[in-house]
Image 1 (cartoon, chains in turn red, cyan):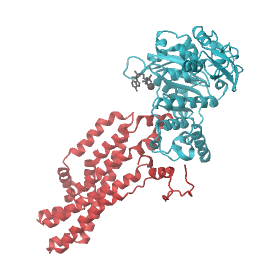
Image 2: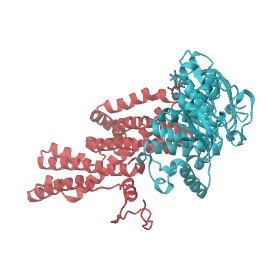
Image 3: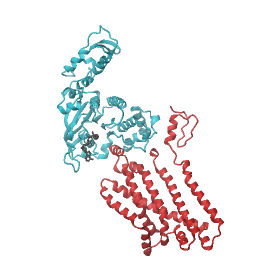
Image 4: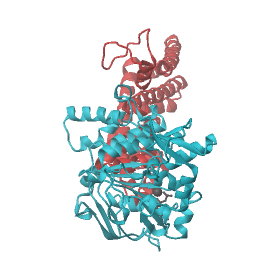
Length: 270
Length: 347
Ligand SMILES: Nc1ncnc2c1ncn2[C@@H]1O[C@H](COP(=O)(O)OP(=O)(O)OP(=O)(O)O)[C@@H](O)[C@H]1O
Ligand SMILES: [Mg+2]
């Protein structure tokens, strides 16, 4: 059945005389990356290059060229990424533990209350909230906190669904083998819930990328300020460019997070 | 199922003593007045059950769906806490033991198998030894040993993931995992329920021969009475509330069902089933002057002998020991035995 090839740990070198056994090996050691992962960045790159070519052919006035230059766009984009990722990380730090809490037997009773809070966070009009808070405080943290509250629900809900979706038989066996409750959580439940929790995290990240511009008035940085500036000063070319960039950013961040999610998913269920 | 005459020793209530009973590795389990009432339910799921499970024996709990078999079993490893009553294992009250530590000393096999999907087969089998902090080399050799024991080639299966195995193979891994840390006790809840009849029968045979070597104390839950007959050293027929309708050896239950409930559980063909527990050499063999084409071994069951005769349309077959004819058994001898069961099967 098996082929006498030298053992090479952690590498895959398909040879011509592959037998079934070797096939099996390569199939359950599916790589994190696949060719289709190139589709999204390729499309985004195509759009951005097209946009770049188009803009570089235009005559821009001072206001326009103040915004549409490499330096300020790079700055704004990096800030945008920084704020969005901060929000996503904070969402994970809050919503995953909350999801764990409300799926434990002893604290299950808290579920309705926790879900209600998260619902309020999402249902509250973020723009209004940002404007309101903007009167008292500006900068990075107010924006991050408000938008965290806004996007926490998706991760919370997915954490609950992911943990409750773990097969009862698997949990029963794990407990029956003598794993402590903490070990069952860390080594069985969470790893198995990674795909679902990860999907929630991607939603939160995309939400963050799309809502960070709303915080422009609070001076948290990002692509919001040039976007709304262009709207106010009636510069449709700039508005269009920034809007496309935000969309491209959302796609790329979702793409990167998707790969991260796959990498974090244990091999056996990938 | 009388053993080879030299090893059979008569004991109280005709209790069967396989080689398992002499193995010190199993420990007895005693349930007394064990009761479980689930919260919000009026009637207890398990109602004051008392039962002794002797060391090294397979005790099968059999009964209708919902009668409390699983609940009873899961109280032994404290996955469920009893409402009242006690369980002792080898004399120790389990409620005085740390539940997590306790479970590491009790093998556990369930119908859903419950292999952990993101762990390889080797990691699944290594689970309890790892929890017990065995060193790596010992774990590795133990994993290979256990996979071999349950009939899976370690080189082929070690690195696979559960989803890459068939149901029957997964069930073998489930058994290997439960046995890995060599626990004196095994709890098995319908372990062969989810596989096809042929695979089930093979798993049962392998399980029996494994138990011959290991001599664990095994609590086995099923609602298949034929499985209970095949595997059990003793069978507890349970009715609702896990109340014991009868607790005895398979032969005794077949020969003397305690009441109608037990009878209904045995179902049709009790007489034929009984023939499964008697060997050809328990009959007085006729002389072998007439040779027949078909032969049965002395160790065959009367059931097998009768089946052969019915199938081939014969009134008698030759009985052979080690391939040499030693006598003959006739249909009439078997019919006599059915109608007038041996009073004491061990005599
Ligand atoms: N967690 C639970 N909460 C409430 N009631 C339960 C719970 N588990 C079981 N029961 C009830 O207790 C009774 C016994 O259940 P149990 O699972 O022990 O039956 P069983 O004999 O194993 O049945 P089956 O052969 O169908 O597996 C049933 O009436 C069931 O509805
Ligand atoms: Mg059950």
